[in-house]
Image (cartoon, rainbow, N blue to C red; front, side, top):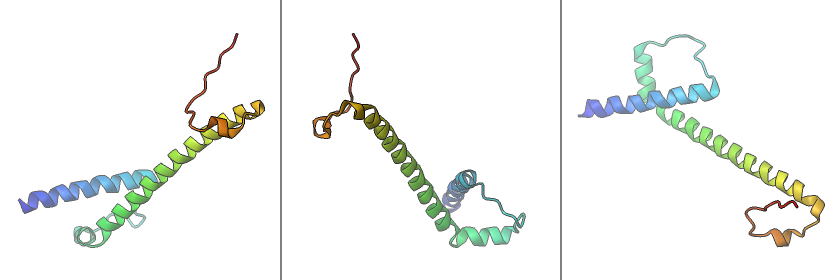
Length: 101
């Protein structure tokens, strides 16, 4: 049972390493590593470092989404600016319709 859990943990670590590698284009410039060195890294601080990288990547994704939402809000405000509508009147409005005659 312990070995299965260990293999599952290593599988999850491998998935996370691949995700970090894909997001960062990171490569090992020194080439392949000996199995003993890989095992030492896995048993050491490497999993924590990968988890920290995953947290940072999630924070970047959240920041980019927030920036996109703010840009869309800015664009909407730019379209409303020529109307000279007081911003207080727009509080709580989630959308505006456009009626043309």
